[in-house]
Image (cartoon, rainbow, N blue to C red):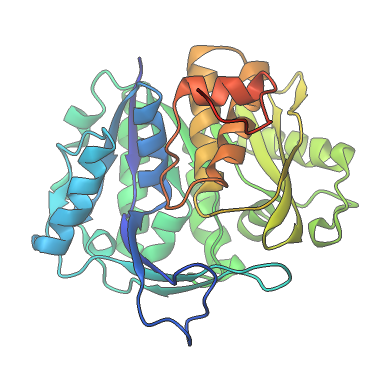
Length: 340
C-alpha cells in the first residue's frame, strides 16, 4: 500500500455525555482527534503506511495522545516532543433543531509553535506517495502556516501528490486572513477538497443557486465552481462532500468529484440518527485518497462518500472502519441487520 504523510494537530476532546449541555455536565468523555490525525487513522485502517507529523508536549497527556495514534496503527516516528500544551476542545452534541457546539482552547499549542527544523522533511518524504494537510493547521499561527509551506515545498521536490481539505474554521480566523494565507499554498496542491462554505470563505468561489441551509443543491452550480477552481489553480481533482442538514441528528450526505473531464456524483445517504458527525469530512477525505490511489475516480468518490457516511455512526473522532466495511455500504448494504 501507499506511504501517506499527514501534518497537523491532535487535540484532547472533552464531550458532554449523551446530549447534555455544557451547563448540565458534571463529567466529560475523553477522545483524541484532529483533522489530519483523523485522516491518518482512517488510512492506516485501510492498510496504508500512514505517518502523522505533529508536535506533542513531553508530558503524560502528550504521551496519551501519542498512544492513541499508535493504537490506530499510525506511524508516529517523526512526531516532535516539545512545547508546553496539547490543544483542547470541548464538544456539546446537538439534537433535533439544537446544533452542536465546539469551544476551542488551543492557543499556544505545541504544533502552533513547532520549529521547521523539528522535522527532517527530506527523510520523511523519501519514497512517499501522498501528503495531506488541512486549512486548520495554517490557521493556528504564522509559524504553523510557514511549517505547512515548507512541507509542501519539500513534498513537491520529492514528487509527492499533495491534497488539502480547506476546512475553514470561523473560530480560528476570518475569510480575509484565510484567503491571504491559503491562496498562495494552492500552487502546491493536486487534490482540493472543500465544501461550498470552505471554497467561498477560503478561496472566494461559490456555486450559484445553492443554499445548503435550505436544502438547495444545484449540481450544475457545483460543476461551474469546480471548473473555475481547476482552471485558476491547476488542480488535478476538485472534490466536495455535500451535507443537507434537516436537523442536528438527521442529515443527507453525498459527494462530488471533478477531474477536468468528468463530473462524478456519489449515491446519497440518509443518515438518521447521527451518533457523532465530528470527523465525517476527514473520513470522506481519507476514503477519497484511498480510492484515487488504488482505483478510479468513479470508485474513489463512492468509497469516500460511504466512508464519510459510516463515520456519522461512530463515537469519537477516528473512523473505526475497514475497507470491507466501506465496500459493503458501497454495494448497498444499508439495512443495519445484525451480522452473525
